[in-house]
Amino acid sequence: MDAAGLYRTVRLIRRFEERAIELVRDGTIVGGIHPYVGQEAIAAGTCAALRPGDVITSTHRGHGHVLAKGADPARAMAELAGRATGLNRGRGGSMHAADFSQGILGANAIVGAAAPIATGAAWAARRAGLDRVAVTYFGDGAVSQGVVLETFNLAALWRLPVVFVCENNGFATTTRVSEAVAGTITGRAHAFGIPASTVDGSDPEAVLHEAATAVERARSGGGPSLLECVAYRFDAHHTWEHAARPRYRTDEELAAGTARDPVEIQGARVAPDERARIDAEVESTLDLAVDFARQSPHPDPAGALDHLYADGLRARAGA
Image 1 (cartoon, rainbow, N blue to C red):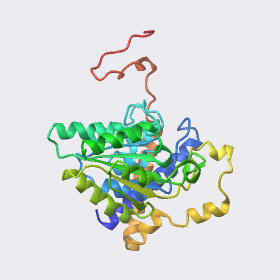
Image 2: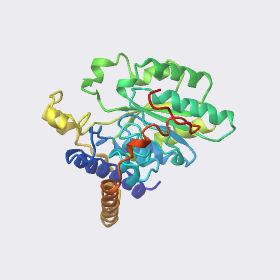
Image 3: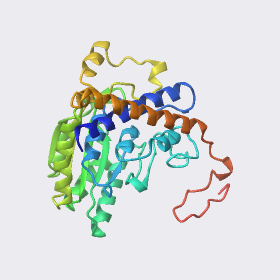
Image 4: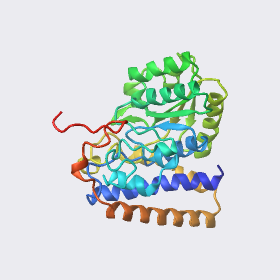
């Protein structure tokens, strides 16, 4: 992907999140979201290294990954708003969006729980003889979860084509990495013999470079890798903070952390007239997405028990 393409992705994610926050405030999106503002380079760079047939799994802070992998912004916004036209018919919401047609196997609200799903998909693809790579995202708060470490072990033991992407934004909710993680994040991967590197998670091209190397290694049979992408979360852990205003970082820290903006870093690599054109195109796309979400119907409560089983079996009321 060229510089302009990467810029379009980071700009789309940034404005999607900002528009979604507006919809939280006016009540269109109920329950709030976990904003991805500040981490756009990670989703943009990693997904740019993938082929259409590759798959990802995501986190509670997953809108950026979903958009970068190719989901329709209008259907993604409708999903956040709980509408029947959403990616998952309004049943997934902000933290469980999926689009199998784009290789998006789903976001997951459980910390670390998406790692074994992606690794299982990588195993299944290899068993089927498919030339497919799986990428799974998780935060710094997940690196001490047992399920993540168990997944590292199996992925390394079976040399599976999976790339682990740790989005280290400095905080697990409000707990600093330095207060929760003994040793290093890359050290956890090294303990299983998994190559790991620390990447500038604010620079889309730096992420793309490292991700392309890890993806090619996985695709060629070299096994798993881990990328620790260090970025800074510009906004709240969750939009409830906009009202509650917990004080776990100072204004000075916020100013320093937000000084390196992925949108501006990548935007500086694009000619001003082309950047203006992309900005206008993104804004038009999101105007349509917001209108689509607002005008779409809510799911019919009578169908609440539909789509629970893969084979189409309908759950019995009261069962």
